Image (cartoon, rainbow, N blue to C red; front, side, top):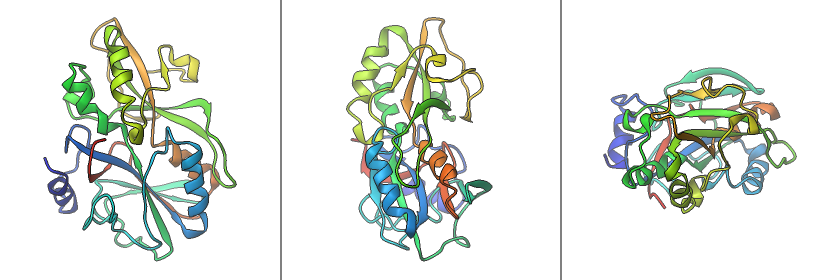
Length: 253
């Protein structure tokens, strides 16, 4: 499905699923929307933490059209689900931001690992969540991000089971996608990065391994800045809901 068609379906409420496995070949992104006061510091946070926060586009103050990555799109309507935070507290999940939008808001689009999954599939790497178009498992870790004046917090990762004999191949493939989290940050024992129970993700959906020899592989994740804006207790923030990404018109690399 082409990116524009998928966004149109989302805008018209004809598509309500996680975006994993859809619009193959196009870059998917995380969304973070903050008040103007915090925008420069958030951009610095992204630059200091490029693995979890690979910046695709920063919009002008008050703008909701990402002119560089998806002209004619509308960030208020073209995502399936949004999250609203007030003073760091999660308030509610929303299906659009039409009634919530304010003129002093600044939007950021950050690359997403859903973008490189088609390449893994094309190289024969089976991922249950991708084949069934479900959500990926995501976890908070004991790895700290590089802090800025306002923003700090733990690194969040996504996990995919990879056959042991294909781990090196997965590392090489995803390493080419530097704007979509790039190569993994950890392979193997989840306890090493502070994940006590791999079957209980903090976000998304857990999937069992297909074979006993499959290895858990962890990539930096764009839910990281959601943790950071909560810790900063920013007065008002909107983000995508994990797994329900914004699909751009940019080709995947």
